[in-house]
Amino acid sequence: MQKPGNPYGTHRVIEPKGVLPQPALRVDNNFTKIYDNEILCDVITLNIDAASFTDIKDRAGNDPEKVAKTMLDIVSQFGKHKNPRTGSGGMFIGKVREIGNSLKDRIGLKKGDRIASLVSLSLTPLRIDNIKKIHMEKDQVDINGQAVLFESSIWAKIPNDMPETLVLAVLDVAGAPAQVDRLVEPGDTVAVIGARGKSGLLCCYQAKKKAGPSGKVIAVVHRLEGREDVDNAPFVDLSVVGKADQALELLETIEKVTDGKLCNKVISCVSRENCEMGAVLITKDKGKVYFFSMATSFTKAALGAEGVGKDIEMIVGNGYCQGHAELTLNLMRESGYLMDLYTRRYC
Ligand SMILES: NC(=O)c1ccc[n+]([C@@H]2O[C@H](COP(=O)([O-])OP(=O)(O)OC[C@H]3O[C@@H](n4cnc5c(N)ncnc54)[C@H](OP(=O)(O)O)[C@@H]3O)[C@@H](O)[C@H]2O)c1
Image 1 (tube, rainbow, N blue to C red):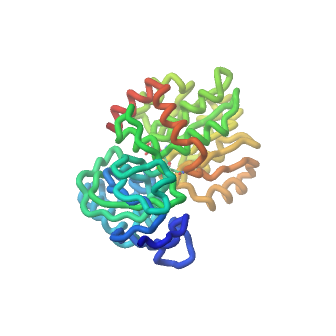
Image 2 (cartoon, protein in one colour):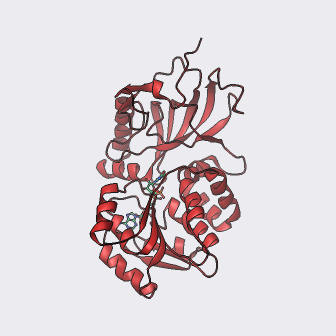
Image 3 (cartoon, rainbow, N blue to C red):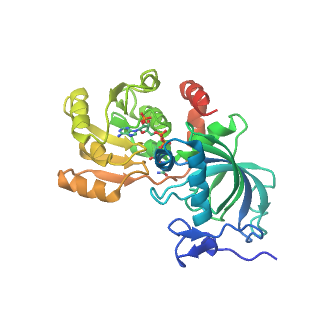
């Protein structure tokens, strides 16, 4: 007889009691008996959130053995992969091992199906038995281990027209292009910061699709290395090199290329801290900034914008919006350029 679980997974929270699994400090990752509304998966690969993985690699001096140790420590301490410094997680792909009795007949999933979790590892109970391989440049880690998804967790079956690791990579950031789809209007000037990154290029594609020929997509890249990825992209109108943490320099650059008009929409896809003011300064008054980056500080953005007298709307990067997985996978199917580039990068 399986125990009934809470739809949001609070039955797994050990500490502090009463909070939901994401803000919880520690969750129960003992999967000997699952609850009646859980999906138990054998995990194949973890995709660690870019802000978190960048932080882990930095602290480990880029040594894969130290990265592995840090990851194992996080999971053994907290029962989930929530980096205590960034607060963020990632997602996983895995194979369904067991489905709780109350879910079995109503979710269209069966034992053996391969799925991608679309909820953060920062709330997903996870056990790592051993780390098989760390893909340092892809933010992906092959493991033996298990995880459970809750009744309220979202997931997607792995489509069979794309490589699994590519699906894992793009679904991790599916919220970004899907929110861009809602935000960008025809004729907009859109700046994407961190444009060469995984979410950045997807956002550039969707921004151009929505802004149309009268709009402009400006790709802001961090450094010259790899700039060709945005320069060759048929959906980028213009690329500039600029560091978002050097806000005044970035402002000067964007003023030059927009004749001082700045941008109606700014999308922040960076993986490092202190980039809030770069995004704020290059946004027109009454424009909007979408902070997808997990390295964003609410305090720095809110007080920083106030401090420079910017009347702009700032949007927290909710990783979920309806239809985000479908939109992102379709975007990959539509764009031969992205499919080629991401296959080279992530497969
Ligand atoms: N909101 C959500 O639900 C959600 C979900 C998943 C991920 N995220 C977050 O989204 C962000 C992007 O993820 P991703 O997977 O696309 O990361 P990614 O592929 O690592 O891309 C990040 C990009 O940011 C650039 N960058 C770093 N510092 C910068 C700076 N000071 N100025 C300008 N650009 C800078 C990097 O440039 P270089 O390559 O040249 O260093 C890189 O191209 C991360 O913070 C991640 O944690 C959020």
